[in-house]
Image 1 (cartoon, rainbow, N blue to C red):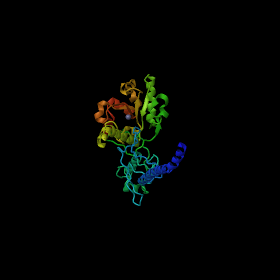
Image 2 (cartoon, helix red, strand yellow):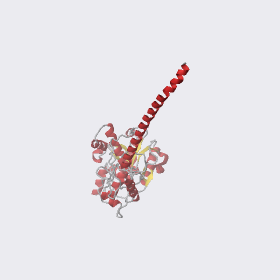
Image 3 (cartoon, protein in one colour):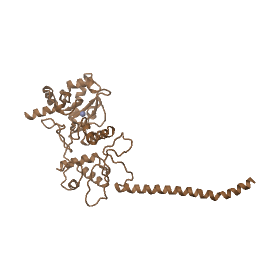
Image 4 (cartoon, rainbow, N blue to C red):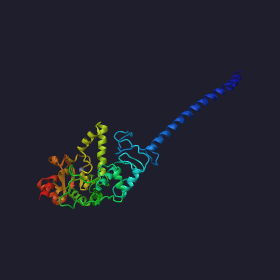
Length: 366
Ligand SMILES: [Zn+2]
Protein backbone atom coordinates (compact mmCIF):
# COMPACT_ATOMS: atom_id res chain seq x y z
CA UNK A 1 0.00 0.00 0.00
CA UNK A 2 2.48 2.62 0.93
CA UNK A 3 4.37 1.72 -2.21
CA UNK A 4 1.23 2.10 -4.32
CA UNK A 5 0.28 5.32 -2.65
CA UNK A 6 3.77 6.46 -3.13
CA UNK A 7 3.78 5.72 -6.83
CA UNK A 8 0.41 7.30 -7.33
CA UNK A 9 1.38 10.24 -5.23
CA UNK A 10 4.57 10.85 -7.22
CA UNK A 11 2.65 10.71 -10.45
CA UNK A 12 0.19 13.23 -9.06
CA UNK A 13 2.92 15.59 -7.73
CA UNK A 14 5.10 15.68 -10.81
CA UNK A 15 3.09 18.33 -12.77
CA UNK A 16 3.27 20.64 -9.73
CA UNK A 17 7.00 20.11 -9.47
CA UNK A 18 7.39 20.86 -13.15
CA UNK A 19 5.37 24.07 -12.82
CA UNK A 20 7.39 25.23 -9.80
CA UNK A 21 10.63 24.51 -11.61
CA UNK A 22 9.40 26.34 -14.69
CA UNK A 23 8.40 29.32 -12.57
CA UNK A 24 11.82 29.44 -10.93
CA UNK A 25 13.50 29.17 -14.29
CA UNK A 26 11.44 32.01 -15.75
CA UNK A 27 12.10 34.25 -12.76
CA UNK A 28 15.81 33.59 -13.15
CA UNK A 29 15.63 34.40 -16.85
CA UNK A 30 13.82 37.65 -16.15
CA UNK A 31 16.47 38.69 -13.61
CA UNK A 32 19.40 37.75 -15.86
CA UNK A 33 17.73 39.47 -18.78
CA UNK A 34 17.16 42.66 -16.82
CA UNK A 35 20.77 42.69 -15.72
CA UNK A 36 21.97 42.17 -19.24
CA UNK A 37 19.80 45.05 -20.46
CA UNK A 38 21.05 47.23 -17.66
CA UNK A 39 24.66 46.39 -18.48
CA UNK A 40 24.06 47.15 -22.12
CA UNK A 41 22.51 50.50 -21.27
CA UNK A 42 25.49 51.30 -19.05
CA UNK A 43 27.90 50.29 -21.76
CA UNK A 44 26.10 52.51 -24.23
CA UNK A 45 26.27 55.46 -21.84
CA UNK A 46 29.98 54.97 -21.26
CA UNK A 47 30.67 54.42 -24.92
CA UNK A 48 28.98 57.72 -25.65
CA UNK A 49 31.11 59.54 -23.10
CA UNK A 50 34.38 57.95 -24.10
CA UNK A 51 34.46 56.87 -27.71
CA UNK A 52 37.62 54.83 -27.19
CA UNK A 53 38.18 51.36 -28.61
CA UNK A 54 38.97 50.08 -25.14
CA UNK A 55 35.94 48.78 -23.28
CA UNK A 56 37.47 49.37 -19.87
CA UNK A 57 36.38 52.70 -18.52
CA UNK A 58 38.92 54.08 -16.13
CA UNK A 59 38.17 56.77 -13.61
CA UNK A 60 39.63 60.05 -14.81
CA UNK A 61 42.24 61.34 -12.46
CA UNK A 62 44.43 64.37 -12.84
CA UNK A 63 46.86 63.05 -10.29
CA UNK A 64 46.64 59.35 -9.61
CA UNK A 65 46.82 58.92 -5.88
CA UNK A 66 48.26 55.53 -4.92
CA UNK A 67 46.73 55.80 -1.47
CA UNK A 68 43.23 56.12 -2.75
CA UNK A 69 41.41 52.87 -2.16
CA UNK A 70 38.26 53.55 -4.13
CA UNK A 71 38.09 55.64 -7.25
CA UNK A 72 35.82 58.18 -5.63
CA UNK A 73 35.07 61.17 -7.82
CA UNK A 74 36.35 63.56 -5.14
CA UNK A 75 38.66 66.24 -6.46
CA UNK A 76 38.77 65.33 -10.09
CA UNK A 77 36.60 67.10 -12.57
CA UNK A 78 33.79 65.05 -14.03
CA UNK A 79 34.41 63.77 -17.52
CA UNK A 80 33.11 66.30 -19.96
CA UNK A 81 30.70 64.38 -22.15
CA UNK A 82 32.50 65.18 -25.37
CA UNK A 83 30.24 64.83 -28.37
CA UNK A 84 31.19 62.74 -31.36
CA UNK A 85 34.05 64.59 -33.11
CA UNK A 86 32.61 66.98 -35.65
CA UNK A 87 34.09 69.53 -38.00
CA UNK A 88 34.35 72.17 -35.28
CA UNK A 89 37.12 71.38 -32.79
CA UNK A 90 35.98 71.01 -29.18
CA UNK A 91 37.69 72.48 -26.17
CA UNK A 92 39.97 69.87 -24.64
CA UNK A 93 41.12 70.16 -21.04
CA UNK A 94 42.08 68.08 -18.02
CA UNK A 95 39.62 65.20 -17.81
CA UNK A 96 38.98 64.98 -21.55
CA UNK A 97 39.46 61.57 -23.11
CA UNK A 98 39.39 59.91 -26.49
CA UNK A 99 40.68 60.12 -30.01
CA UNK A 100 40.89 63.92 -30.11
CA UNK A 101 43.15 63.84 -27.06
CA UNK A 102 45.28 61.17 -28.76
CA UNK A 103 45.61 63.38 -31.82
CA UNK A 104 46.57 66.31 -29.59
CA UNK A 105 49.19 64.22 -27.76
CA UNK A 106 50.61 62.95 -31.04
CA UNK A 107 50.98 66.47 -32.41
CA UNK A 108 52.51 67.77 -29.16
CA UNK A 109 54.99 64.90 -29.21
CA UNK A 110 55.85 65.66 -32.84
CA UNK A 111 56.71 69.23 -31.81
CA UNK A 112 58.75 68.07 -28.81
CA UNK A 113 56.42 69.22 -26.03
CA UNK A 114 54.99 65.91 -24.87
CA UNK A 115 56.91 62.87 -23.69
CA UNK A 116 54.15 60.76 -22.13
CA UNK A 117 52.08 57.96 -23.63
CA UNK A 118 49.56 58.55 -26.40
CA UNK A 119 46.76 57.26 -24.18
CA UNK A 120 43.93 59.67 -24.92
CA UNK A 121 43.81 60.85 -21.29
CA UNK A 122 44.21 64.61 -20.82
CA UNK A 123 46.10 64.54 -17.53
CA UNK A 124 48.71 66.77 -15.92
CA UNK A 125 51.42 65.76 -18.42
CA UNK A 126 49.26 66.76 -21.38
CA UNK A 127 48.27 69.99 -19.65
CA UNK A 128 51.92 70.89 -19.02
CA UNK A 129 52.72 70.19 -22.67
CA UNK A 130 49.82 72.37 -23.87
CA UNK A 131 50.94 75.18 -21.54
CA UNK A 132 54.49 75.01 -22.82
CA UNK A 133 53.24 75.06 -26.40
CA UNK A 134 51.00 78.05 -25.68
CA UNK A 135 53.78 79.99 -23.98
CA UNK A 136 56.26 79.46 -26.81
CA UNK A 137 53.63 80.33 -29.40
CA UNK A 138 52.47 83.53 -27.72
CA UNK A 139 49.07 82.17 -26.70
CA UNK A 140 47.31 82.44 -23.36
CA UNK A 141 49.10 79.75 -21.33
CA UNK A 142 46.11 78.23 -19.54
CA UNK A 143 46.74 74.57 -20.39
CA UNK A 144 43.35 74.33 -22.10
CA UNK A 145 43.34 73.35 -25.74
CA UNK A 146 40.60 75.63 -27.06
CA UNK A 147 39.86 76.51 -30.68
CA UNK A 148 42.63 79.07 -31.01
CA UNK A 149 45.29 76.81 -29.51
CA UNK A 150 44.17 73.86 -31.64
CA UNK A 151 44.23 75.86 -34.86
CA UNK A 152 47.79 77.10 -34.18
CA UNK A 153 48.87 73.62 -33.07
CA UNK A 154 47.75 71.97 -36.30
CA UNK A 155 49.05 74.76 -38.52
CA UNK A 156 52.39 74.80 -40.25
CA UNK A 157 53.47 77.87 -38.30
CA UNK A 158 53.36 76.00 -34.96
CA UNK A 159 56.68 76.58 -33.22
CA UNK A 160 58.42 73.48 -31.85
CA UNK A 161 59.79 73.28 -28.32
CA UNK A 162 63.01 75.30 -28.00
CA UNK A 163 66.22 73.39 -27.34
CA UNK A 164 67.68 72.81 -23.87
CA UNK A 165 69.18 75.79 -22.04
CA UNK A 166 72.77 76.08 -20.81
CA UNK A 167 72.03 76.89 -17.18
CA UNK A 168 75.63 77.81 -16.36
CA UNK A 169 76.33 80.04 -19.33
CA UNK A 170 75.23 83.35 -17.83
CA UNK A 171 77.57 85.54 -15.77
CA UNK A 172 74.77 85.92 -13.23
CA UNK A 173 73.54 82.67 -11.68
CA UNK A 174 70.11 81.51 -12.74
CA UNK A 175 67.53 82.66 -10.18
CA UNK A 176 64.32 80.69 -9.74
CA UNK A 177 61.85 81.55 -6.99
CA UNK A 178 58.27 82.69 -6.36
CA UNK A 179 58.91 85.84 -8.34
CA UNK A 180 61.07 84.37 -11.11
CA UNK A 181 59.42 81.43 -12.86
CA UNK A 182 60.99 79.30 -15.53
CA UNK A 183 59.05 79.02 -18.78
CA UNK A 184 56.91 75.90 -19.07
CA UNK A 185 59.05 74.65 -21.99
CA UNK A 186 62.30 75.05 -20.05
CA UNK A 187 64.72 72.16 -20.05
CA UNK A 188 68.34 72.29 -18.87
CA UNK A 189 71.15 71.23 -21.18
CA UNK A 190 73.53 68.39 -20.43
CA UNK A 191 71.45 66.30 -18.04
CA UNK A 192 72.99 63.09 -16.74
CA UNK A 193 72.01 60.44 -14.26
CA UNK A 194 73.70 61.53 -11.02
CA UNK A 195 74.50 57.93 -10.16
CA UNK A 196 76.49 57.55 -13.39
CA UNK A 197 78.78 60.36 -12.16
CA UNK A 198 78.80 60.02 -8.37
CA UNK A 199 78.56 56.24 -8.29
CA UNK A 200 78.74 54.37 -4.99
CA UNK A 201 79.90 57.38 -2.95
CA UNK A 202 76.29 57.76 -1.94
CA UNK A 203 72.96 55.96 -2.09
CA UNK A 204 69.97 57.14 -4.08
CA UNK A 205 66.26 57.53 -3.46
CA UNK A 206 65.79 56.53 -7.13
CA UNK A 207 68.49 55.32 -9.48
CA UNK A 208 67.36 57.64 -12.27
CA UNK A 209 67.73 60.99 -10.45
CA UNK A 210 69.24 63.44 -12.92
CA UNK A 211 71.29 66.61 -12.71
CA UNK A 212 73.35 68.88 -14.97
CA UNK A 213 76.69 67.19 -15.59
CA UNK A 214 78.91 69.94 -14.18
CA UNK A 215 76.84 70.04 -10.96
CA UNK A 216 76.88 66.25 -10.64
CA UNK A 217 80.67 66.22 -11.06
CA UNK A 218 81.02 68.90 -8.38
CA UNK A 219 78.74 66.85 -6.13
CA UNK A 220 81.00 63.82 -6.61
CA UNK A 221 84.09 65.85 -5.59
CA UNK A 222 82.28 67.26 -2.56
CA UNK A 223 80.97 63.93 -1.29
CA UNK A 224 84.38 62.33 -1.79
CA UNK A 225 85.97 65.13 0.29
CA UNK A 226 83.40 64.64 3.06
CA UNK A 227 84.06 60.90 3.11
CA UNK A 228 87.81 61.62 3.25
CA UNK A 229 87.06 63.75 6.34
CA UNK A 230 85.25 60.77 7.85
CA UNK A 231 81.77 62.19 7.27
CA UNK A 232 79.35 59.64 5.79
CA UNK A 233 76.95 58.10 4.75
CA UNK A 234 75.16 60.31 2.21
CA UNK A 235 71.99 59.77 0.30
CA UNK A 236 70.60 61.72 -2.65
CA UNK A 237 66.87 62.26 -2.37
CA UNK A 238 66.15 64.59 -5.25
CA UNK A 239 67.76 66.30 -8.22
CA UNK A 240 66.32 67.51 -11.50
CA UNK A 241 62.56 67.67 -11.65
CA UNK A 242 60.55 68.50 -14.76
CA UNK A 243 57.77 71.05 -14.59
CA UNK A 244 55.31 68.20 -15.18
CA UNK A 245 56.84 66.35 -12.16
CA UNK A 246 56.34 69.46 -10.06
CA UNK A 247 52.75 69.82 -11.20
CA UNK A 248 52.07 66.21 -10.21
CA UNK A 249 53.66 66.70 -6.77
CA UNK A 250 51.78 69.95 -6.26
CA UNK A 251 48.40 68.51 -7.30
CA UNK A 252 48.89 65.39 -5.19
CA UNK A 253 49.46 67.55 -2.13
CA UNK A 254 46.43 69.72 -2.91
CA UNK A 255 44.25 66.63 -3.27
CA UNK A 256 45.59 65.17 -0.02
CA UNK A 257 44.74 68.36 1.87
CA UNK A 258 41.28 68.46 0.35
CA UNK A 259 40.57 64.86 1.25
CA UNK A 260 42.26 64.51 4.62
CA UNK A 261 41.80 68.01 6.01
CA UNK A 262 38.51 68.70 4.23
CA UNK A 263 39.79 71.98 2.83
CA UNK A 264 38.33 73.71 -0.21
CA UNK A 265 40.49 73.68 -3.33
CA UNK A 266 41.70 77.26 -2.81
CA UNK A 267 42.45 76.60 0.88
CA UNK A 268 44.34 73.43 -0.07
CA UNK A 269 46.36 75.32 -2.70
CA UNK A 270 47.30 77.99 -0.16
CA UNK A 271 48.38 75.33 2.33
CA UNK A 272 50.36 73.44 -0.33
CA UNK A 273 52.24 76.60 -1.31
CA UNK A 274 53.69 76.79 2.20
CA UNK A 275 55.85 73.76 1.49
CA UNK A 276 55.71 72.97 -2.24
CA UNK A 277 56.80 75.34 -4.99
CA UNK A 278 54.41 76.08 -7.82
CA UNK A 279 55.30 74.45 -11.14
CA UNK A 280 57.97 76.64 -12.78
CA UNK A 281 59.09 78.07 -9.44
CA UNK A 282 61.09 75.15 -8.09
CA UNK A 283 64.85 75.35 -8.23
CA UNK A 284 64.91 71.63 -8.97
CA UNK A 285 63.90 72.44 -12.56
CA UNK A 286 67.34 73.93 -13.15
CA UNK A 287 69.11 70.57 -12.72
CA UNK A 288 71.52 72.42 -10.41
CA UNK A 289 69.83 71.65 -7.07
CA UNK A 290 70.14 68.54 -4.96
CA UNK A 291 68.42 67.35 -1.79
CA UNK A 292 70.82 65.46 0.48
CA UNK A 293 69.83 63.12 3.21
CA UNK A 294 71.16 60.86 5.94
CA UNK A 295 68.95 57.77 6.14
CA UNK A 296 66.88 57.66 9.31
CA UNK A 297 67.93 61.09 10.58
CA UNK A 298 66.74 64.65 10.42
CA UNK A 299 69.41 66.24 8.23
CA UNK A 300 69.71 69.41 10.33
CA UNK A 301 70.92 67.31 13.28
CA UNK A 302 73.70 65.47 11.46
CA UNK A 303 77.48 65.83 11.18
CA UNK A 304 76.89 65.78 7.42
CA UNK A 305 74.96 69.05 7.69
CA UNK A 306 77.70 70.71 9.78
CA UNK A 307 80.34 69.58 7.28
CA UNK A 308 78.23 70.76 4.33
CA UNK A 309 77.63 74.21 5.82
CA UNK A 310 81.37 74.71 6.28
CA UNK A 311 82.64 73.21 3.03
CA UNK A 312 80.02 73.26 0.26
CA UNK A 313 81.22 76.68 -1.01
CA UNK A 314 84.60 75.32 -2.02
CA UNK A 315 82.88 72.85 -4.37
CA UNK A 316 80.62 75.45 -5.97
CA UNK A 317 77.51 74.80 -3.87
CA UNK A 318 75.50 77.19 -1.69
CA UNK A 319 73.12 76.52 1.19
CA UNK A 320 70.18 77.88 -0.69
CA UNK A 321 67.47 78.20 1.97
CA UNK A 322 68.36 79.25 5.50
CA UNK A 323 66.08 80.39 8.31
CA UNK A 324 68.00 83.69 8.53
CA UNK A 325 67.08 84.63 4.96
CA UNK A 326 63.64 83.07 4.59
CA UNK A 327 61.97 86.47 4.28
CA UNK A 328 64.10 87.10 1.17
CA UNK A 329 64.07 83.63 -0.41
CA UNK A 330 60.39 83.05 0.37
CA UNK A 331 61.21 79.50 1.51
CA UNK A 332 61.69 78.39 5.11
CA UNK A 333 65.03 76.82 6.00
CA UNK A 334 65.92 73.65 4.08
CA UNK A 335 69.25 72.39 5.39
CA UNK A 336 69.30 69.51 2.92
CA UNK A 337 68.93 71.58 -0.26
CA UNK A 338 72.12 72.67 -2.01
CA UNK A 339 72.37 74.59 -5.25
CA UNK A 340 75.31 74.60 -7.64
CA UNK A 341 76.48 78.05 -8.82
CA UNK A 342 80.18 77.36 -9.46
CA UNK A 343 83.12 77.87 -7.08
CA UNK A 344 83.67 81.59 -7.75
CA UNK A 345 80.08 82.63 -7.09
CA UNK A 346 79.73 80.28 -4.12
CA UNK A 347 82.84 81.59 -2.36
CA UNK A 348 81.85 85.21 -2.97
CA UNK A 349 78.36 84.55 -1.64
CA UNK A 350 79.86 82.98 1.49
CA UNK A 351 82.19 85.96 2.01
CA UNK A 352 79.40 88.49 1.40
CA UNK A 353 76.92 86.46 3.46
CA UNK A 354 74.32 86.81 0.74
CA UNK A 355 71.56 84.51 -0.37
CA UNK A 356 71.03 84.09 -4.10
CA UNK A 357 68.35 86.79 -4.32
CA UNK A 358 70.66 89.34 -2.67
CA UNK A 359 73.65 88.22 -4.71
CA UNK A 360 71.87 88.42 -8.06
CA UNK A 361 70.69 91.93 -7.21
CA UNK A 362 74.22 92.85 -6.09
CA UNK A 363 75.74 91.54 -9.33
CA UNK A 364 73.22 93.29 -11.54
CA UNK A 365 74.13 96.62 -9.90
CA UNK A 366 77.85 96.17 -10.54
ZN1 LIG B 1 65.17 70.72 -2.70
